[in-house]
Amino acid sequence: MGEVEIDWPWQYNFPPFFTLQPNPETRAKQVQAWKSLILEYCRKGRLYLVDVRESSHIPLFNNSNINRKLEESVIISILSELQKTGHAAPVDKAKHRWEIYWHTLDEWASMIYGYISSRGFNNSVLTLYELSQGEDVQTEEFYTIPQEVLIKALQVLEKDRKCELILSDEDQGVKFF
Amino acid sequence: MRRRAGLGAIQKQRLEQEKYKDKGTEIQENQFEQITKQMEFFKVNLEEFATKHKNEIKKNTEFRRQFQEMCASIGVDPLSSGKGFWSVLGIGDFYYELAVQIVEVCLATNDKNGGLITLEELRERLIKARGKRKEHQEISKDDLLRASQKLKSFGSGFNVIPYGKGKYMIQSVPGELSMDHSTILTQASSSNRAYVSVSYLKKELNWEKERSENALEHLVKQGLAWIDTQDTYEKLYYFPSLFNDCVNATAN
Image (cartoon, rainbow over all chains, first blue to last red; front, side):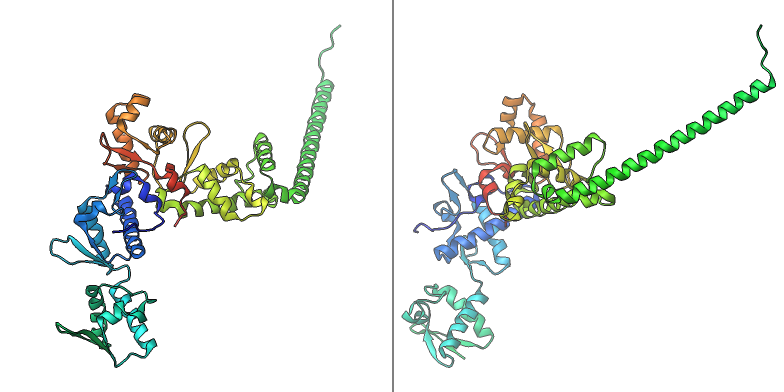
């Protein structure tokens, strides 16, 4: 994982930021700051998946300059907070691996549908590869979105009958309406 | 031969007394009239002075300070009343305006410092918010302290806490702070690291563990201190309001 370029908030250099605070009001502020920082970090670094067990290798959770790191259990509780607003979801039962949605699935969905409508691709079929890796989408926000996340976003559209996923083994595509 | 006091003499005496009394009342009335006139004159002069120097009052911090001192020496607090001729001075307005701005800065930074801010940071933020004109920039610590003192009258939600020599913090959340607490703030600011610990207080002040812990935990409960349990030796208590990166960070 390469270095993520980010303007760290002041809290990142504040040692107690890495200790869960006992005072409920202070803790609420702390968790809020962590939530924004996680989303900002992942957005800047285009990270879609975080493995909590790897957290000590991620500068986000481990500030080696001040020798402070965020405990795994605390990370999980903060990610669970992000889950409440649709900004994260665990992908395994043990809650080790998390998808991070710096755009919520709803936001991704409307972004993709906006693109389809603007290009007049309604009623056409696109492969998932085209939609996420194709030359035409290079300037789109959802360029390089991983398939797992893409499918979830498209499922949002499917519910609204705006598309239909075609997920067979050899052909992974989507038809937009 | 000694003359006995007759009726005539008594009457004469009474007459004289009455005359004295009249004279006394007259003098009193005269004096009262004179004082009233003087006051009137003083008031007119002061009003003239005020209108003439209104800008000076708003602009010049040294002028304000001296004016305040002059008022204090004759037992008058121009800030205590918005009514009457003091209001035309505009000095109350000035501090009123300043107080509102202080509250604004405190609210804006509350999220990061828990409602405790050094006078220096407060001043810097306030000046930034007030705009670039020179008169907006000339706000002294004295002005800020006076305006903050006024805010205290709104109840326990606002407090000026002296810590160290000539240093002050403004507390904008309810909660009593004792001498021990301000002593801790002094220690945290002089250690230049924005934190203290039980052993640090033991070393610097020879405080017993219990005393330190009580005071420190109180500060945590008030949301003014954060704990750090990742130090190899002991629990550290940090003050965001004294932490450089926090002080320099943009609010919100």
